[in-house]
Length: 507
Image (cartoon, rainbow, N blue to C red; front, side, top):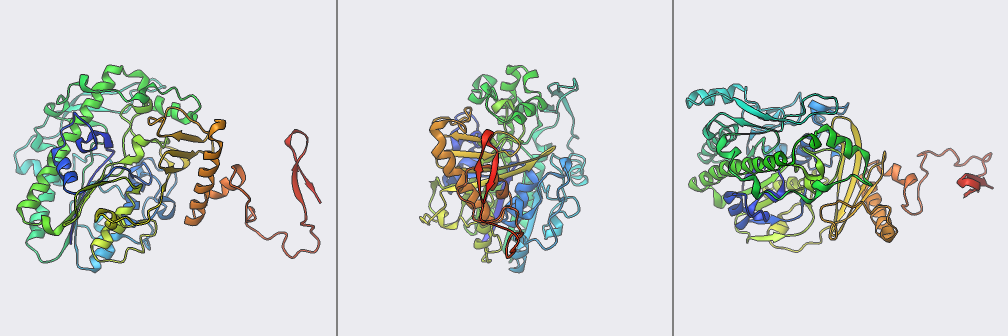
């Protein structure tokens, strides 16, 4: 079984026609969804590039593989996977797979894609490396003009400086865009692999539609901003929310940008999605022409989502909203009937899926569960919840989240916790954590998250033991045996609340 893995970066699920957007043209991904399995509740394990990609590579949750931040904003975490970490390309190579990766790597500083056996140009970093020698050679070979932008869109930071670049006009034809270049290189690899006897795994990782949105006029102006309905959460007040969210909104200078510009930015983002869809269409068409489709499983997903003004935010960050945690997920396995699934599944589950399709043992991908039974229309016993985590971007900021069918709980140790009723409040504007009528839901989710973290070995649960209602603790929180077998210590005491809530020991 050949494997074609198509991935975008910072991609909102609601920009695709197959996920319900009536305006954005995504015919190629829509066709893939119509001939495969579309997962409606597909989530990233963490909404930041490098940790999410490392989870895909290893089949491990971020706390386990420990690659917790993008190196450009690293705050003291690891910058490369440990040498002994399991990765799926190692297992595929042992079964004589040819391995190719075209596009974004962003998986470390010392070890690149080639370190894991992948063929392809080394394209590190978080944005299109438009000064890369291979890209420049591509432009020269085809007589195409170099990268040049104008009309940058920025806000103003609280310190009075220009904010991050959000968008600009790109003065190149579509054939010169980095996206077209990546698709061309992917097609070249497909053609080489088609001529060989070995099975292949080929990944094409686009750097977009990650901001800044740098597009030729034809795509920058493709969609009328009047078509854009602003996300309801643009009305966010941050009342009852962790203060870091208001700070992040200021960091992205949202309130310094006219609302008409926000609407235009969303329209430009849509244009970026269409540009990438067209390049994916070129790859899928060539797959068909080469006669490979009947022997190739195709994946499409993203590493995480993007705010594009939702909750008065841009990019991603320390806010575990659906906008950045729910992502597109489409898998087509030859012979499997088209369908839509609503199980809660994760990007990390792609790892065990790849391993099973390649005939490898999926068990080393310890936090991953194969999606093959779901794609084949089976009804296995599937968990009714999923867990996600975050460790910081720009600064350390630990979070854990549990998401079930209706409710979502987010634990923020430095701040207020969050509880959302996604049925009544799908845009997550009202934090219900302290509401008395949600007491039972809060307690149930807190206990369930606690159990799942303990089962995983995620030591975040130690904070929860002392700070939240998790029921009766069954271990000594000091993680020691100070009082065991000591005849000089009377251990028969209970803690009771005295005046003012002070705890006193009663022998």
